[in-house]
Length: 290
Image 1: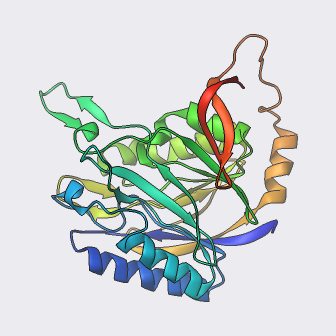
Image 2: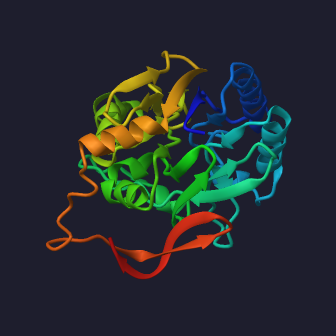
C-alpha cells in the first residue's frame, strides 16, 4: 500500500489503567471508522502516576491482549504507544508494540535512551532509576512500508533515526510524553529536523495535560519528508488523521539525496550487525559500518 491514512491519538493518561484503556479503545473505534489503516498512541498510554514500576506487565498481558483484540476487531494496525513491560531487574522496560490487523504482535521496541540529568539548582531526574533501557534499534517491513520505532527522549539522538533510515525506514513512529518545559521550544524543531535529515515521515503522538510530576506538551503532529507539519492536534485530548504517501518519500529522497551523498570514505556509523528476528529488522549484534 503506497498511500494510506494514519490516526494519531493524543491522550491525557492518568493513574487509572482501566479508564486509560477504555479511552484508547474508543479512539481506535473512532479512527478505524474514519478509515485509518494504522493508529498510534503516546508514551505510557495505559498508566501515568506514582508506582510506575508496580504497573509492569508481561507481554502477552493485560494491555497487549486488549490492544491485540482491538486491532483484530477493527482490522487495523496499531502502534500501541508504550507501557511498562516486566523485566527481571525489577525495573520495567518502556515498551511499545506493533500489532497487525489480525491481532498479531509483529515487533516490539523498548526505549533506548534514559533521561538522566543533574540540574544546576541541585535537583535531578533519573529515568534509569526506575526503568530498564532497551538494547535494540528496531524497524519493520510491512504492507504499509518500512516502519521505524522510537520513544520520546530518543528524539534527541539523531544517529538512531539515521540508522533506521539506512535500514530502510520510510515512516518513523515516536510515541512521547514530552514535557511542556522543553517541548515548547524543542519539540517541533527536533521532529522536523529528524524528518528532513532522513527523508521520512515522523508520526509523533504525545501526551497532554498535568501529570504527577510534570505537564505534558501535547502538540502531537505528523511531519512529512520535506519537513512540513501536515497535521497536528488541538490543545486537548483527542485524535486526528494524516495521509502517508510512500511515493512522496521516494520523490523527496531523489530531490535531496542526503542518504546517498554521505562521505563514507571519511566517516561512518559503527553499528551492531543487522539481522532479522520474527520479521523485525533489529540492529543488535556484531559490528557493521553504515
